[in-house]
Image: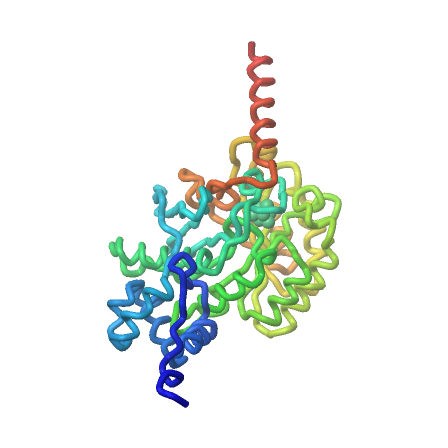
Length: 388
Ligand code: SF4
């Protein structure tokens, strides 16, 4: 070996192609450091600096050697999506609009409660599915989010809440992947982001406090069961295929019986796993006592609880929120059927941050948004004609 070959191999990285270290879980980070001729334990140091202390400037990472601190900026960066706008609801809910590349924006919502703070995280720019009660669906779809754009939402929220610092209790204790997009259609990046959320050197969130919500992408529920250790929520919303085909059209591909089998497998795979069935309450559509009885039937043998969500209207929506008394009748039937059933408290409605209301700003590649806007315009024209 000559003196030249003993020197660390210089890696030429063009500045625009710098590796964003926020894209990597601990294992990926260790591999990165090995690839640049460094020891893998550097991953642990960087992980703590970034995710626990919120430091993104290598110069401040004092337990790295001076030489490494000076070298890293030419190879990599730590970059989360920037907060473009923050809105705070009267009830304390915060919504952040986060700027991505090329004109796309996503939304992330923080919901503080007495003893916990839940962050609702997006997984895609828009959504390719077309659930008919969902505001995100009307925006169309642009692309999947990267790991740094997903975990960057958690990073931004934690750091922002820390910066506001009015209330030390006000922090992220729970994450729900229930924002914009279908997380199981963006499996790999979501899976890595979930691992970072759970990692003890990052956010150290317990399994019960990280929940992925899916509309029912059955093969990837099985994959999630094998590869991640998180809780599951299912956007069920209807107790029979006829109705679910309309409300959640992916049901035509993965009907209720197939979906329920996947949920049973998910629960059996690791005992103590939690499944929540999400059920939006739409007046006169899915909120009748017979629907509650059908729901009990299809849930037999699925260890789960039921969460009833009063519908949050948005401009152009075709549905109304169920009446309080109808929700209560529905709830009591499902409880009698043996399922713990809660009614979700609507939060952040005054800033359009409530469940199903997230829209961001999307360069739509599906033309769905244009069709939706045209439909609203038509309806308004018809209305104004009939008032004339
Ligand atoms: S409910 Fe979820 S899966 Fe369905 S369109 Fe909205 S964001 Fe997509």
